[in-house]
Amino acid sequence: MSAKPPIVCLLGPTGTGKTGAAIAISRRMPASVINFDSRQVYKDFPIITAQPDAEERAACPHHLYGFLPTGEKMTAARFVELAMEKIEEVRDRGRLPILVGGTGMYLRSLLSGIASIPEIPEDVRAGVLARIRAEGPQRLHAELEKVDPEYAARIHPNDTQRNARAAEVYAATGRTMTWWHTESEHSPAPYDALKVGMKIGLDELEPHLARRISAMLEQGAMDEAVAAYEKCPDPEAPGWTGIGCAELLAFLRDEMSLDAARGRWIKNTRAYAKRQLTWFNKETDIHWFAPGDNGPVCDLVEKWLVGKND
Image 1 (spheres, one colour):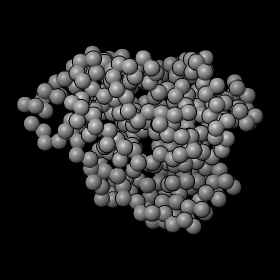
Image 2 (image 1 turned 45 degrees about the horizontal axis):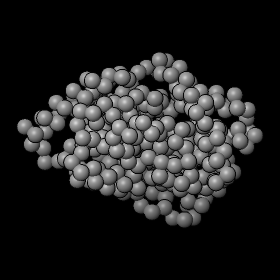
Image 3 (image 1 turned 45 degrees about the vertical axis):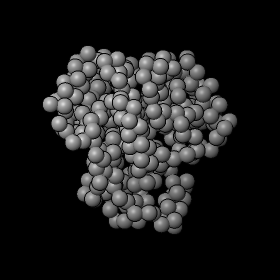
Image 4 (image 1 turned 135 degrees about the vertical axis):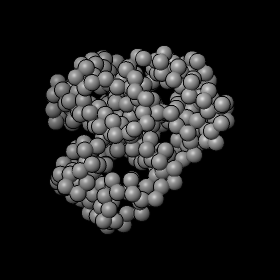
């Protein structure tokens, strides 16, 4: 019998049916879903970030979705703290914790340990933010590609928050984000994790993503963005940096047409899915399934849990 408590991690690129697989597992055994998607934590964007809907939430308990204000920042370290609290809470209730999402850094930080990056001096942080405002995140991303190509490949050139973080860490410590996440001393979380991945090829996934974005717009994504903008009009707020949020914000600020915003949303979502696949394909212990293969996923989880108790 394993000394570490078991958790199941459902991962993969956006739009591949991870929530459906988690709910299927919950129908076979008492289970609760814990989010590890960095965008689905924002409460003002449930449609745009594809958070589980009311019917899905009613199927089993869901945690760490839609609780963070648009102006507040989420970090990997904070996620680990919140996730560990929820895992223990779920286990205390006799349920299986199922972590569901696509932010690979959050999951790695939880399972392998959070990198102990020192506090960044305020003058370094202020200097990086001044550069972001003057030059945009793309310049920092181009510099990141030279010093840390592995990490640069995982983040979008327009991602203000992550490009700024990578730049300030390198400026303050002389070490890259990849070094901190792979070479520095970590304290791994005390869990035995089964990693289950859902994926299909990008060419097959792209039309599904385009249809999903059209459905989001029909379901009220624009109304959602308008309401969020009224509450938080700061375009630099962390919640606005997410894909879909950023494109609709550009439309609201008269920076592009709605058709152009939709097109960019689709393009950026595909690029994000590609980065997610690149990240997860480097993991060696993931059991991969096609979207909708929920029966075999449930069978694997049941067999794995039985093995933990032998």
